[in-house]
Image 1: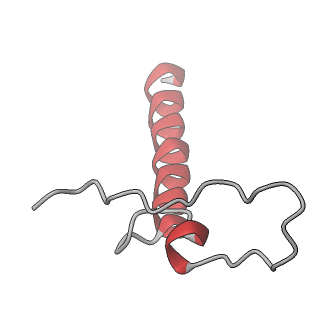
Image 2: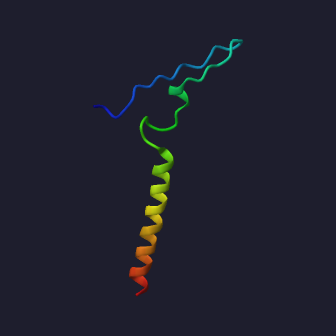
Image 3: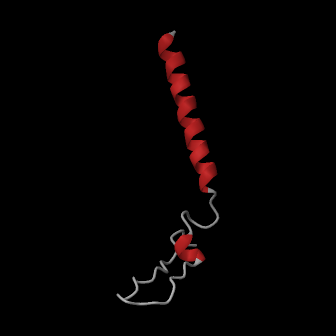
Length: 61
């Protein structure tokens, strides 16, 4: 199973085109399908804070 999704980005519209631009779910999505980006961000933040606390406790003793 491939973890990289196919890119479905459409080219920019021609100059002078009057019809509205439609944004599909594929082009609007910010993270890979199935991953909760907020949880990854919070997990990384908590992990970095915990690592800093452990290093501080190790070197201050």
